[in-house]
Image 1 (cartoon, rainbow, N blue to C red):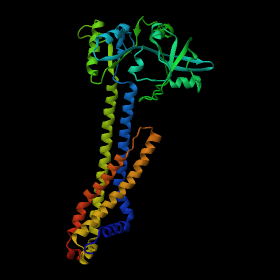
Image 2 (image 1 turned 90 degrees about the vertical axis):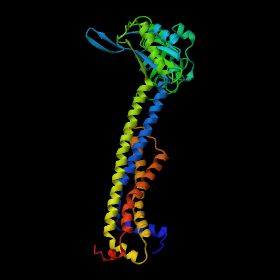
Image 3 (image 1 turned 180 degrees about the vertical axis):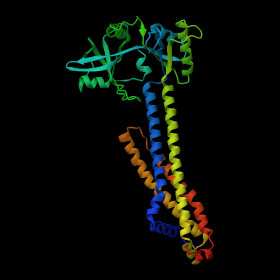
Image 4 (image 1 turned 180 degrees about the horizontal axis):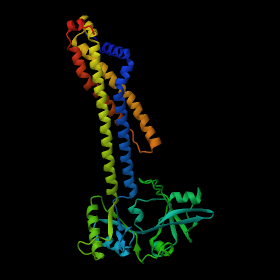
Length: 414
């Protein structure tokens, strides 16, 4: 027994664990649950963060939106956009007076029925200016962008999203075709690249775009909004660093243009969409940390369970330890054997936990519809947790077993 090799020690540890395998499995259960929970929670957290990053990209680079503020009708406070406080002049003022602005576009919008032959579809339309696609990072899959003449002449031209294309044209080429938007015929000049759903579940491809003045004359005629009015002004800052200064300056320019007295409420709202998504990202990060903490607590509880069972095992096997010491096993071999048993429990639990975590991540993505991102670093982290749990919580029972007096151990009648 003296000078036993690592293989002998591992063999004896495995034999001891197999002698009471039900207890061994139950002991490792805490580690199994903890490791699986760590993998699932970290994967969901990383997947959600990646989805938020994609959302920011789809919203447009360095985008700022200016919206009409709340209005009042008598004593009743109306919703956002219920007054028309923005105009082409405001967009022009932002373009000319705000440093750090690269793109500006006035926007009006609505919904209508679009028809091609015997196919029809209800969709959202946007009346835009030339900078709008650059602000929002839209690109064309087919056809061409609106020309300067389209904007200046209120041309009846339209660019459609992929969902509208599929509903009206199927696999046919829509470029050059005529569709009816409401009651007005429009010529399709382009088709946008597919964007997919946004982070709130909306279909970004279920949309059509027309020149701003065209929308005013052809699609907004029955609504009766004031001339030169816009429902929104989209602004593209030159850089992310410039956005805070751009936002402040936009507010200053519009307050001056609207003759708003000091201390009075603005009749507009300047909104940075990246900030909104970043706030949601921070909330998701905090939730991931909280769930990760819960999973870590589960690991600690599992480790305490291993230590508890190993201490019980030492007490039950005092006479066995005495016999091994009597035939030549030293304290080092006894300590290594019990430490090896703890390591096998935690590492075995870790392997099972990793398998359950991978399966749980797949099930979460498939049935819960949460974004997940499983990578090897997460699995490596889980394996490291399992090894550390075995070493940390197995050390004290192993030391206690190695410190037993051989004579007293042989006399034990347990």
